[in-house]
Image 1 (cartoon, one colour):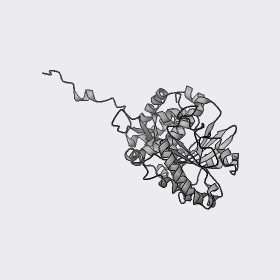
Image 2: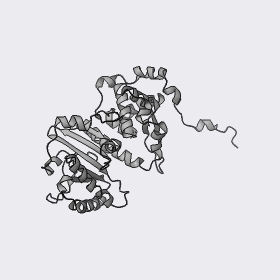
Image 3: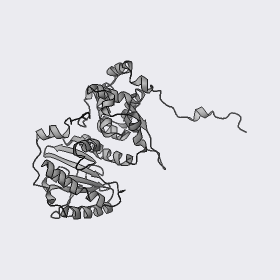
Image 4: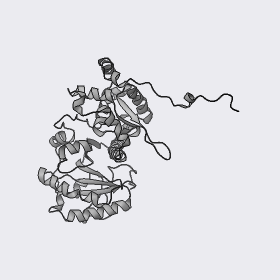
Length: 347
C-alpha cells in the first residue's frame, strides 16, 4: 500500500512566471524594456515577425554563439512577453522549442516603425496559430535553409554572407499577383553576388508537376519586370530530385523563352566535400543539358552556368534585398551576427 503518494502538482514541469497580455503592453512594461532589450533582441523580434516561426537551433545559428546561450536569453524574452513558444508533438523523441512573436515584441516593433500594433496586422492568436498549421513543417524547413547558410558562413569565415532573405509573405506582397515563391535570397562572396527564388519541395506535393507548373508564372514575372531571377529547387532525396527535374525539363521546354527561368536543384541528403548541410557548396545541379550530369556547382558558381544573367550591383542590393517595401511590413535587417559589445552585455 502506498502511504505517501506523490502530489499531482509535483509531477508538473516548472513553468516560468510571465506577465499577462494586458500588462505586457502597458507603458510601464514597455519603459522597462527600453533598458533591457539589446539591438539583437529587437532584431530577433523583426525576424520572427518576418518569418513567423523559428526554432531554438535556428535562432542560435542566426546570432548566438551556442544553443545554451540562446536558450538563456530566450527564456528572459519569453518572461517579458517579447516572444512566445510552443513544442510540437512527435511520436518519437521531442521536437525543439518553436518561437513566435508575442504581444510586447509586436508593440516594440510597431513603435519603432511609428505605427500602432493593429497596423502591423499582428494578432497573438494568429501568431500562435501556426502551431496547428499544415504548413508548419514547410515554413520551418524554408527558414532552416537560410539559417543554415548563415551558420555555415559564420563557422567557415570564408567571407560568404547572406545579404538578403525575404519570407513567403513578403514575396507575396511584391509578386503575389504573378507568382508566389517560398522565399527570396541573396548571397555575396568576394567572387560576386547571386540572387534566387527558392522552391522548397517537401515531397508531399501531389506530383512533381505541381512544382513545374509554377515555371510559367516565373516566366511571366521575368517578362513583366525585365529581370531574370534564377529558381533554386530543394528536394528531399535523389529519387525525388530526378522526378522533379524531369517535370521541370518538360515544363521549361514549353516556355516561349526558356532562358528567362534559370533552374538548379539539390537534395537534402546530398553530401558535398564541405559537409552535408552547407548549401553554399558544390551541390547545385543546373537544369541545362549542356552541363555534365555529375557536375554540381557552388552557390556562387551558378552565375557561370547562366552567362546571360547581368551582374548584380550594389544599388540593386540595397533596394531589392533588404530595402523597405511599401506598406506597413517592417524591414527585416540582414541576417548578421550582432556586434560583440551586445554579446558582452548578455543580449
